[in-house]
Image (tube, rainbow, N blue to C red):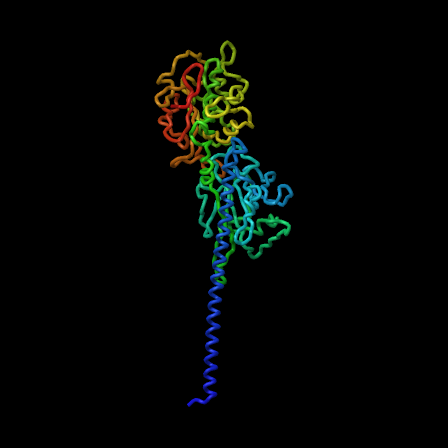
Length: 497
């Protein structure tokens, strides 16, 4: 039989146990709630970061797509970053006047003010950083920018495997980075009067591993820079996972940017597309050369293979003294001028003292269908600017009968042995615009250690029989635009049938 004190003790023990269980239960609940809250917070931060990076990427692509609207003839350019503390431009503005050397990659803060996105911050509350390939920034401008211009950056996984840019044509043209939280050794100075801190030292924000640093660019023109995404590694001493670099990134590849740009009507093969009008104007310029030469002959093309010379330089598009009939559109025609010879001591070539085809006096107001006249002779004109940036895409074929020589014009029509054909019709010549790459076509410049693949005609035009001897069938079979120079006097230009 228990005494009263024993009963009381049992009851107190029971109450104490109950209290202990309740405390444990509340602790467990609190821990679970706290864990859920932390997971939820991390999830929301991840969403915020992804949203900011995606919005920044889209703003850059939109900028590239609409750039030509205010800069006729120029497509695909991206803004410089905000990469140093200045009064002009204001914070968040693109530093156009101090954007490094021509074709040199540049890194800085994302230019949210210039792009009118508002301040874009990641889930960690940091403003975004941004790097752009040298040939895609403006200013300073490269000599030629089009859909075949490769980026100059690569992205690596945290494990060291390359993620983007293993092939030259797959390299990155721009990258946006979230610097994320401060890591040991970093000291970020935030100007309280600013919106993003006005701290332009990338070393305090961006990191990398032993071989790749997101904070350091190599410098110099056409040098490839590497970036790495965030990752964890194992600390051998403590057997713990640590985060030595935590930058989150999003990239824009060459293909992503140009897939968006070439959706503009300028690249559609309708009557008023810019590239169709350009092809017609270039053919008309060639025809004008023939109509203003004493013996109605046409110039020879430039070579297809530049043998290591720069495809971006206008004067490298030089006609040849050799008997060539198929090649790139010629900018310099001095050899053709000479081949036309003289009649009674007077040069047969038009304006022979001027080797530049566009400046001979006949190509400054060329009538085209679907738009206003095209000016190829004025370097600030839309026509010349378009040609300058897309010159590696234009090809030209001259018939054997119309190739430059001092033979008189007999007025005889073309025949199967001395003229090219397009869809069964004989023509004096044809100018073709090579559309976007298809299939296995690769068009890389011989720069930054890349192999020259611009030297192959097969990487550009798709016609039935490009025999290249002044005859052959140049009927397009895919996405090329062609304008034909008719075999008549005077020479006229028509859309190839």
